[in-house]
Image 1 (cartoon, rainbow, N blue to C red):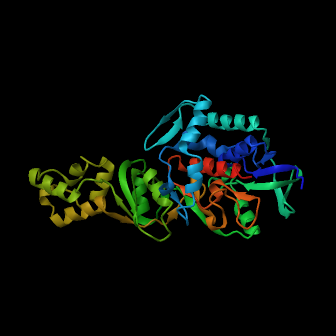
Image 2: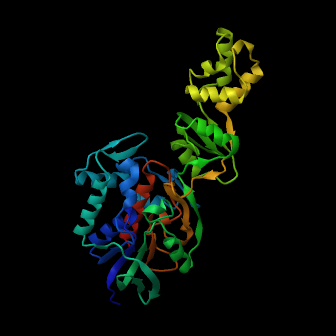
Image 3: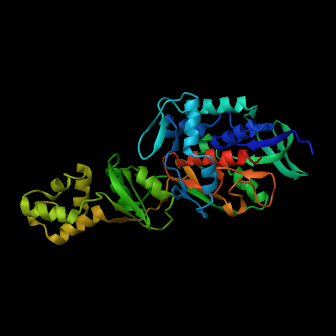
Length: 393
């Protein structure tokens, strides 16, 4: 059957653009649409405006999913080195910041322009401010009713992302479409997001707002050793954002504010060698001063070390090395970098991202139940899943 287009892709973000480019390269007639005015806003704002476009260490263990093996095929088909080669082809200067994270030297706009150039060269028709009113299956494909008219296609790709950062266009569209066609949706929730607290702990965080430290943050068996930041709402920083994707409501997290140092031993040694040294001053040797004072105040452990019992010192050490805290929640989708959960991978082909029960229907990117760690992993999933679908549509 002849259709208006071979492929219609809904969502012109990272995954949608990559899929459009690859499908266009294969000679497919591609219509890429998006309801927003500006294209790829999540790329634009990422990495402080410099776009952390991939991570050289992207592999399956860096992703959360009900099926941890699902992402392997797409990541193997299109690797970080493949995207780096594309960046180099367009002469975009970049650098590794830390832990394999790659950023543009100049601006995230370079990545957007690169993708747009590739899309236009591949013959992709791009149309923004296009609302989808309805989708229905028709013989040999799908009919899309939009604010710009009705079109049909042999392959339909949903690349509309998750619910994070609604001010740049996030909606439930992808999940609603999946449910309409009988696919299961793993409950979405905010990921890579600051954690919030109440009561005395919130007040303590407020007084420490702006203090940062390298810390180990643990939830069950998952541990992240990166920066932690106190804020007027609770805790943030890379280690907290990372653990937030794993954390479940009502559960505790455990924080070690000085990994690698036994604080009890440290304080006992100082007590013996400098008994007149105040506890907060001793702690200030290895903690920011405000944080050291806060810990000592909370444990009523002020004054010279020589006058403090080992029981008191042990209590201080537990707060520093083994701080058990229970968040009340997160800051939600407003500040979340990603959405955890999404289209159940059991309903999709890991090779092509096609719905198993609906030939020609594909889901890619953040809308799928695959969520990367902080540091370029989610963009790599967008490139890889978009590429995989682009070879199959």
